[in-house]
Image: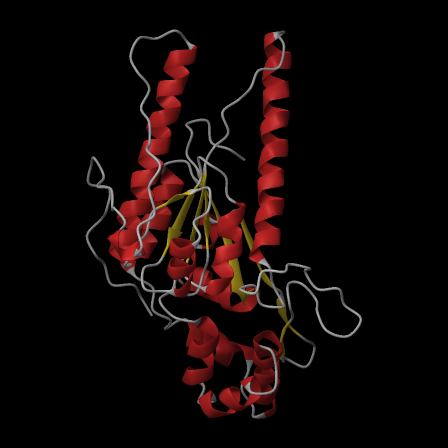
Length: 314
Protein backbone atom coordinates (compact mmCIF):
# COMPACT_ATOMS: atom_id res chain seq x y z
CA UNK A 1 0.00 0.00 0.00
CA UNK A 2 1.32 3.41 -1.00
CA UNK A 3 2.52 5.71 1.77
CA UNK A 4 0.78 9.07 1.96
CA UNK A 5 4.09 10.99 1.89
CA UNK A 6 5.13 9.92 -1.65
CA UNK A 7 7.81 7.43 -0.57
CA UNK A 8 8.52 4.98 -3.41
CA UNK A 9 8.02 1.25 -3.65
CA UNK A 10 11.50 -0.30 -3.45
CA UNK A 11 12.06 -3.74 -5.00
CA UNK A 12 15.34 -5.49 -4.19
CA UNK A 13 17.09 -8.37 -5.84
CA UNK A 14 18.63 -10.50 -3.07
CA UNK A 15 21.94 -12.14 -4.02
CA UNK A 16 24.74 -9.57 -4.41
CA UNK A 17 22.21 -6.82 -3.73
CA UNK A 18 21.10 -7.40 -0.13
CA UNK A 19 23.64 -10.09 0.76
CA UNK A 20 27.09 -9.76 -0.81
CA UNK A 21 27.21 -13.27 -2.22
CA UNK A 22 25.31 -15.80 -4.28
CA UNK A 23 23.35 -17.64 -1.58
CA UNK A 24 23.25 -20.94 -3.53
CA UNK A 25 27.03 -20.98 -3.90
CA UNK A 26 27.45 -19.88 -0.29
CA UNK A 27 25.55 -22.92 1.02
CA UNK A 28 27.22 -25.34 -1.37
CA UNK A 29 30.69 -24.08 -0.49
CA UNK A 30 29.98 -24.01 3.27
CA UNK A 31 28.80 -27.63 3.21
CA UNK A 32 31.77 -28.86 1.18
CA UNK A 33 29.88 -29.70 -2.03
CA UNK A 34 31.42 -27.25 -4.50
CA UNK A 35 32.91 -29.80 -6.90
CA UNK A 36 29.75 -31.90 -7.01
CA UNK A 37 27.58 -28.83 -7.67
CA UNK A 38 29.85 -27.84 -10.55
CA UNK A 39 29.35 -31.32 -12.02
CA UNK A 40 25.56 -31.03 -11.72
CA UNK A 41 25.63 -27.66 -13.49
CA UNK A 42 27.23 -29.30 -16.52
CA UNK A 43 24.07 -31.35 -17.04
CA UNK A 44 21.18 -29.46 -15.41
CA UNK A 45 19.71 -25.94 -15.44
CA UNK A 46 20.71 -24.02 -12.32
CA UNK A 47 17.37 -24.31 -10.54
CA UNK A 48 17.24 -28.09 -11.07
CA UNK A 49 20.90 -28.43 -10.10
CA UNK A 50 20.48 -26.70 -6.72
CA UNK A 51 17.44 -28.87 -5.96
CA UNK A 52 19.41 -31.99 -6.85
CA UNK A 53 22.31 -30.77 -4.70
CA UNK A 54 19.99 -30.41 -1.71
CA UNK A 55 18.89 -34.02 -2.28
CA UNK A 56 22.48 -35.26 -2.29
CA UNK A 57 23.31 -33.30 0.86
CA UNK A 58 20.27 -34.84 2.55
CA UNK A 59 21.40 -38.34 1.56
CA UNK A 60 24.78 -37.56 3.16
CA UNK A 61 23.10 -36.68 6.45
CA UNK A 62 22.96 -32.90 6.12
CA UNK A 63 19.76 -31.48 7.59
CA UNK A 64 17.68 -28.42 6.83
CA UNK A 65 19.04 -26.92 10.05
CA UNK A 66 22.60 -27.47 8.77
CA UNK A 67 21.65 -25.52 5.65
CA UNK A 68 19.98 -22.80 7.72
CA UNK A 69 23.07 -22.58 9.92
CA UNK A 70 25.36 -22.06 6.94
CA UNK A 71 23.22 -19.12 5.83
CA UNK A 72 23.71 -17.25 9.10
CA UNK A 73 27.29 -16.47 8.05
CA UNK A 74 26.41 -15.08 4.60
CA UNK A 75 27.95 -11.58 4.29
CA UNK A 76 25.49 -8.78 4.97
CA UNK A 77 26.79 -5.20 5.05
CA UNK A 78 25.66 -2.92 7.89
CA UNK A 79 25.10 -0.30 5.18
CA UNK A 80 22.55 -2.60 3.50
CA UNK A 81 20.83 -3.15 6.85
CA UNK A 82 20.75 0.59 7.52
CA UNK A 83 19.37 1.35 4.04
CA UNK A 84 16.54 -1.16 4.50
CA UNK A 85 15.58 0.11 7.93
CA UNK A 86 15.83 3.80 7.03
CA UNK A 87 13.85 3.45 3.79
CA UNK A 88 11.15 1.59 5.71
CA UNK A 89 11.06 4.24 8.44
CA UNK A 90 10.69 6.94 5.77
CA UNK A 91 7.54 5.24 4.50
CA UNK A 92 8.79 3.01 1.67
CA UNK A 93 7.15 -0.30 0.95
CA UNK A 94 9.93 -2.86 0.42
CA UNK A 95 9.72 -6.06 -1.64
CA UNK A 96 12.16 -8.74 -2.81
CA UNK A 97 12.28 -10.11 -6.37
CA UNK A 98 14.96 -12.79 -6.52
CA UNK A 99 16.07 -15.90 -8.39
CA UNK A 100 17.38 -17.38 -5.11
CA UNK A 101 14.77 -19.35 -3.14
CA UNK A 102 12.34 -18.82 -0.28
CA UNK A 103 14.19 -21.00 2.26
CA UNK A 104 17.54 -19.24 1.84
CA UNK A 105 16.04 -15.74 1.80
CA UNK A 106 13.77 -16.35 4.79
CA UNK A 107 16.62 -17.86 6.80
CA UNK A 108 18.91 -14.87 6.25
CA UNK A 109 16.24 -12.23 6.86
CA UNK A 110 15.06 -13.98 10.03
CA UNK A 111 18.60 -14.33 11.38
CA UNK A 112 19.20 -10.59 11.01
CA UNK A 113 15.74 -9.48 12.15
CA UNK A 114 14.81 -8.03 8.76
CA UNK A 115 11.79 -10.14 7.71
CA UNK A 116 9.18 -7.67 8.99
CA UNK A 117 10.55 -4.85 6.82
CA UNK A 118 9.41 -6.54 3.57
CA UNK A 119 5.79 -6.71 2.43
CA UNK A 120 6.38 -9.58 0.02
CA UNK A 121 8.93 -11.84 -1.67
CA UNK A 122 8.75 -13.25 -5.21
CA UNK A 123 11.28 -16.05 -5.59
CA UNK A 124 11.63 -19.76 -6.32
CA UNK A 125 9.46 -21.68 -3.84
CA UNK A 126 11.13 -24.03 -1.35
CA UNK A 127 10.00 -26.30 1.45
CA UNK A 128 11.26 -29.08 3.69
CA UNK A 129 9.43 -32.31 2.85
CA UNK A 130 8.25 -35.03 5.23
CA UNK A 131 11.63 -36.77 5.00
CA UNK A 132 13.45 -33.60 6.03
CA UNK A 133 14.88 -32.91 2.57
CA UNK A 134 14.88 -29.33 1.27
CA UNK A 135 13.05 -29.08 -2.06
CA UNK A 136 13.56 -26.09 -4.36
CA UNK A 137 11.20 -25.54 -7.26
CA UNK A 138 11.14 -23.09 -10.20
CA UNK A 139 9.05 -19.93 -9.93
CA UNK A 140 7.86 -20.52 -13.51
CA UNK A 141 7.60 -24.23 -14.20
CA UNK A 142 9.46 -25.38 -17.30
CA UNK A 143 10.42 -28.60 -18.98
CA UNK A 144 8.22 -31.42 -20.26
CA UNK A 145 4.55 -30.45 -20.28
CA UNK A 146 5.16 -26.94 -18.93
CA UNK A 147 4.74 -23.70 -20.87
CA UNK A 148 7.42 -21.74 -19.02
CA UNK A 149 7.27 -17.98 -18.68
CA UNK A 150 7.20 -17.23 -22.41
CA UNK A 151 9.69 -14.35 -22.30
CA UNK A 152 11.90 -14.17 -25.38
CA UNK A 153 14.62 -12.08 -23.72
CA UNK A 154 17.77 -14.29 -23.60
CA UNK A 155 18.89 -12.80 -20.28
CA UNK A 156 15.98 -14.45 -18.43
CA UNK A 157 16.69 -17.97 -17.06
CA UNK A 158 14.05 -20.63 -17.86
CA UNK A 159 12.80 -20.85 -14.26
CA UNK A 160 12.07 -17.16 -13.69
CA UNK A 161 11.31 -14.09 -15.75
CA UNK A 162 11.54 -11.19 -13.33
CA UNK A 163 10.03 -8.94 -15.99
CA UNK A 164 6.76 -10.89 -15.85
CA UNK A 165 6.72 -10.50 -12.08
CA UNK A 166 7.48 -6.78 -12.34
CA UNK A 167 4.58 -6.38 -14.78
CA UNK A 168 2.27 -7.95 -12.20
CA UNK A 169 3.60 -5.68 -9.44
CA UNK A 170 3.05 -2.60 -11.62
CA UNK A 171 -0.50 -3.72 -12.49
CA UNK A 172 -1.24 -4.10 -8.79
CA UNK A 173 0.15 -0.61 -8.20
CA UNK A 174 -2.14 0.84 -10.87
CA UNK A 175 -5.19 -0.97 -9.48
CA UNK A 176 -4.49 0.23 -5.94
CA UNK A 177 -3.93 3.79 -7.13
CA UNK A 178 -7.19 3.76 -9.10
CA UNK A 179 -9.10 2.38 -6.12
CA UNK A 180 -7.59 4.98 -3.79
CA UNK A 181 -8.46 7.81 -6.19
CA UNK A 182 -12.05 6.57 -6.48
CA UNK A 183 -12.38 6.29 -2.70
CA UNK A 184 -11.00 9.80 -2.18
CA UNK A 185 -13.37 11.23 -4.79
CA UNK A 186 -16.32 9.42 -3.22
CA UNK A 187 -15.47 10.76 0.23
CA UNK A 188 -15.14 14.29 -1.15
CA UNK A 189 -18.32 14.02 -3.20
CA UNK A 190 -16.52 15.08 -6.37
CA UNK A 191 -15.40 13.56 -9.64
CA UNK A 192 -12.43 11.20 -9.51
CA UNK A 193 -9.18 13.08 -9.92
CA UNK A 194 -5.85 11.88 -11.25
CA UNK A 195 -3.51 10.91 -8.42
CA UNK A 196 0.24 11.08 -8.87
CA UNK A 197 1.54 7.53 -8.72
CA UNK A 198 4.43 6.64 -6.44
CA UNK A 199 7.75 5.81 -8.06
CA UNK A 200 9.15 2.28 -8.17
CA UNK A 201 12.86 1.68 -7.51
CA UNK A 202 14.48 -1.60 -8.59
CA UNK A 203 17.93 -2.71 -7.43
CA UNK A 204 19.85 -5.61 -8.96
CA UNK A 205 23.13 -6.90 -10.34
CA UNK A 206 22.68 -9.86 -12.69
CA UNK A 207 21.54 -10.58 -16.24
CA UNK A 208 18.12 -11.60 -14.96
CA UNK A 209 17.66 -8.09 -13.52
CA UNK A 210 17.64 -6.50 -16.97
CA UNK A 211 14.13 -7.62 -17.97
CA UNK A 212 12.37 -6.08 -14.93
CA UNK A 213 14.35 -2.88 -15.49
CA UNK A 214 12.81 -2.61 -18.96
CA UNK A 215 9.31 -2.80 -17.48
CA UNK A 216 9.81 0.31 -15.34
CA UNK A 217 8.30 3.57 -16.52
CA UNK A 218 9.43 7.16 -16.80
CA UNK A 219 9.46 8.47 -13.23
CA UNK A 220 10.77 5.15 -11.87
CA UNK A 221 14.39 4.29 -11.05
CA UNK A 222 16.68 1.35 -11.66
CA UNK A 223 19.81 0.93 -9.54
CA UNK A 224 22.30 -1.43 -11.23
CA UNK A 225 25.38 -2.57 -9.35
CA UNK A 226 28.48 -1.25 -11.13
CA UNK A 227 30.84 -3.84 -12.57
CA UNK A 228 28.10 -6.49 -12.79
CA UNK A 229 26.27 -7.85 -15.87
CA UNK A 230 23.07 -5.79 -15.58
CA UNK A 231 25.10 -2.58 -15.65
CA UNK A 232 26.57 -3.40 -19.07
CA UNK A 233 23.15 -4.39 -20.43
CA UNK A 234 21.56 -1.15 -19.22
CA UNK A 235 24.42 0.94 -20.59
CA UNK A 236 23.98 -0.69 -24.01
CA UNK A 237 20.19 -0.27 -24.10
CA UNK A 238 18.76 1.92 -21.32
CA UNK A 239 15.24 1.55 -19.92
CA UNK A 240 12.67 4.34 -19.61
CA UNK A 241 13.44 4.63 -15.89
CA UNK A 242 16.17 6.91 -14.55
CA UNK A 243 19.41 5.00 -13.91
CA UNK A 244 21.34 5.43 -10.66
CA UNK A 245 24.33 3.13 -10.26
CA UNK A 246 26.03 1.97 -7.08
CA UNK A 247 29.44 0.42 -6.56
CA UNK A 248 29.31 -0.84 -2.97
CA UNK A 249 26.86 -1.00 -0.10
CA UNK A 250 27.67 2.43 1.26
CA UNK A 251 26.86 3.74 -2.24
CA UNK A 252 23.67 1.68 -2.28
CA UNK A 253 22.47 3.31 0.92
CA UNK A 254 23.42 6.80 -0.21
CA UNK A 255 21.85 6.53 -3.68
CA UNK A 256 18.67 4.79 -2.52
CA UNK A 257 18.02 7.17 0.36
CA UNK A 258 18.74 10.13 -1.92
CA UNK A 259 16.01 8.90 -4.26
CA UNK A 260 13.61 8.41 -1.35
CA UNK A 261 14.30 11.94 -0.06
CA UNK A 262 13.75 13.43 -3.53
CA UNK A 263 10.47 11.56 -4.08
CA UNK A 264 9.10 12.61 -0.68
CA UNK A 265 10.10 16.23 -1.42
CA UNK A 266 8.48 16.03 -4.86
CA UNK A 267 5.23 14.73 -3.38
CA UNK A 268 5.22 17.47 -0.73
CA UNK A 269 5.74 20.14 -3.40
CA UNK A 270 2.96 18.69 -5.56
CA UNK A 271 0.60 18.69 -2.59
CA UNK A 272 1.40 22.34 -1.88
CA UNK A 273 0.83 23.20 -5.53
CA UNK A 274 -2.50 21.37 -5.57
CA UNK A 275 -3.53 23.31 -2.47
CA UNK A 276 -2.64 26.60 -4.13
CA UNK A 277 0.46 27.16 -1.99
CA UNK A 278 3.17 29.44 -3.29
CA UNK A 279 6.54 28.15 -4.34
CA UNK A 280 7.88 26.01 -7.12
CA UNK A 281 7.83 22.22 -7.02
CA UNK A 282 10.95 20.23 -6.37
CA UNK A 283 11.95 18.07 -9.34
CA UNK A 284 14.27 15.18 -9.87
CA UNK A 285 16.12 15.22 -13.18
CA UNK A 286 16.33 12.18 -15.42
CA UNK A 287 19.81 10.71 -15.39
CA UNK A 288 21.53 10.21 -18.75
CA UNK A 289 23.18 6.80 -18.87
CA UNK A 290 26.92 7.04 -19.52
CA UNK A 291 28.88 4.28 -21.21
CA UNK A 292 30.08 3.01 -17.86
CA UNK A 293 27.53 2.69 -15.09
CA UNK A 294 30.31 3.24 -12.60
CA UNK A 295 30.38 6.88 -13.69
CA UNK A 296 26.79 7.47 -12.65
CA UNK A 297 26.25 10.31 -10.16
CA UNK A 298 25.78 9.42 -6.52
CA UNK A 299 23.44 11.95 -4.87
CA UNK A 300 24.31 13.07 -1.36
CA UNK A 301 21.69 13.14 1.37
CA UNK A 302 20.78 16.39 3.04
CA UNK A 303 21.06 14.95 6.53
CA UNK A 304 22.99 12.20 8.28
CA UNK A 305 20.62 9.25 8.20
CA UNK A 306 23.27 6.56 8.25
CA UNK A 307 24.20 5.10 11.63
CA UNK A 308 27.70 4.23 12.59
CA UNK A 309 28.86 0.92 11.16
CA UNK A 310 28.04 -1.95 13.45
CA UNK A 311 29.10 -5.54 13.54
CA UNK A 312 26.33 -7.72 12.15
CA UNK A 313 26.03 -10.87 14.29
CA UNK A 314 26.72 -14.22 12.65
